[in-house]
Amino acid sequence: MLPQSYEIPAAILLVLSGAIACFAGYRLFRLVLGIFGFLFGAWAASSMMGVTNTIGMLVAAMLGGLAGALILVFAYFVGIALVGAGLGALAAHLAWSQFGTTDPPALVIILLAVLGAFGAMMLQRYVIIVGTAFGGAWTLIVGALALAGERTPERASPAVNVWILYPLTPAPGHQWLPLVWIVVSIVGAAVQLGVTGKKQ
Image 1 (cartoon, rainbow, N blue to C red):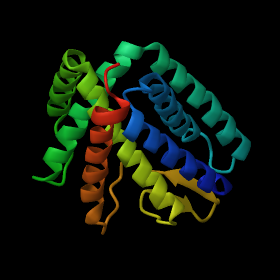
Image 2 (cartoon, rainbow, N blue to C red; image 1 turned 90 degrees about the vertical axis):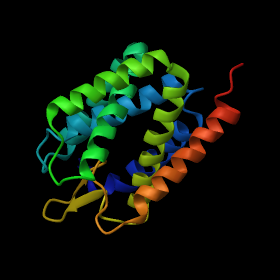
Image 3 (tube, one colour; image 1 turned 45 degrees about the horizontal axis):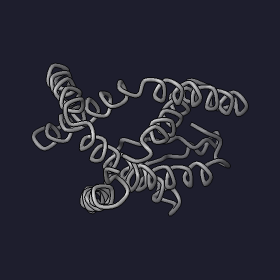
Image 4 (cartoon, one colour; image 1 turned 135 degrees about the vertical axis):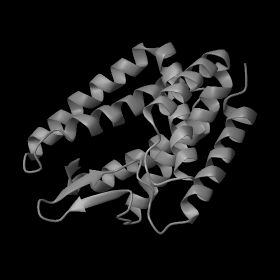
């Protein structure tokens, strides 16, 4: 949550960080961890502030972002496990949403997150490439939609002039969004495997 006037700079940051993660995530993995730690930390911390407290939102975003970046950068191997766990949890949600309208049971999410974390540690290079490609592609798309003026991945509260980011909410009425996400993710993974993520 940020003041409305920060929507465009935040959207540009999302596009740039998404592109870095999607197309060079393996080579710049520590930087990507720092960027995404900052984004998630800022998002979580600023959401705890009142919508009328502009300075509080900005200070919370900066402090939360710095804390999130430090946590993920210094927890490099934990970060790899978290990427795998995140992919496992994402897979649980995507698969479950095809069969029902409710969230998957906690046990399913936990099981797939643990399996994802274990797999990530066993196949670090490929998990990092796939995880950063898919995560970066989604971030890039959310940022691009925000720049284009879409109000589906982010919603502005007109009463208080605050920009609220909902980064995991799919855009209703945009059937093309999952297909574009998959295509951009595959292209990003291919670029990493063939160019930026090649073993030296």
